[in-house]
Each structure stands twice: as C-alpha cells, then as structure tokens.
Image (tube, rainbow, N blue to C red; front, side, top):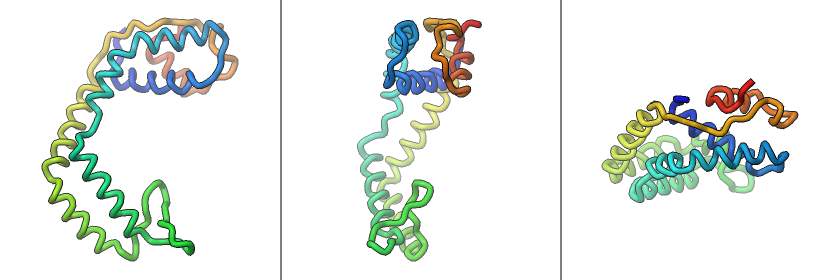
Length: 159
C-alpha cells in the first residue's frame, strides 16, 4: 500500500508509544513486526531531520536569551505560558539582541530553513509500505479513534 512518508512517521510515533505498555501476544507481535518493517526508512528520515551543530548553537543561545530576559514570577523564575517565555517588560531589548544573534548565525539559519523545506517535500512523497496486518479482533479492547485512524489510513487493520 502506498502511503505518504509523513503517515509513516505518524505510525512510527504511535507504535513507539504503544511499545511502552503490555498487550496480548498477538497485538504485541503486530507492534514489533511493523516497527521492524519501518525501521530503516525511519532511521533515514530521522537522520535527515537532525539540525546542524551551528544551528543548535544558535538555538541554545536564543533559548538562553529568552530565559534570561523573560518576565519573572515572585520567586524570580521565568514565567512560561503556552510553552513559551513571557516577554513583556524586556521585549524591545530582547528583539534587538535576537536580531543580532540571527545576524551572527544567518548562514546556519538559512541552511536549516532550506533543510526543513526539503524534508517537508520528502515527507509528502509516497512510500510503498507493506506492513504486518491484523484484524479488529486482535486489537486491544480500548483504542483511541486517533490510533484507529492511523491504522486504517496505513492499511494495517483489516475489517
């Protein structure tokens, strides 16, 4: 069955999450067998998605800058909302320093942006996936609709 490589990544993440729990033997076999079939392609995609050392250096400095300039709570800890540092008091100064940082790492940022764009194109490519199929009777009694969608979309569950 042909699926997009992005769907393969979604399936991999779901199977990785499922691997952390205990299931009946046939469903555990289903998980392990499919992970085995997918591993080489996932390894390639994972390697392609890694950021360069220079971009990681930029990102670490950006993160430290945001943390140091973030608004602080009563105990002096940075305030975080929606997984982001709150920057109200020092926003203008932060933006100036961030622009300087971006200038210093301009090449690394451009290369990373290009890499992400190329990876997104690759993730939209079709992939011939011959996974190990199962039937509804071997699935756990309780399964999320999201997980069932992934299994059906990738052709792993036969009705």
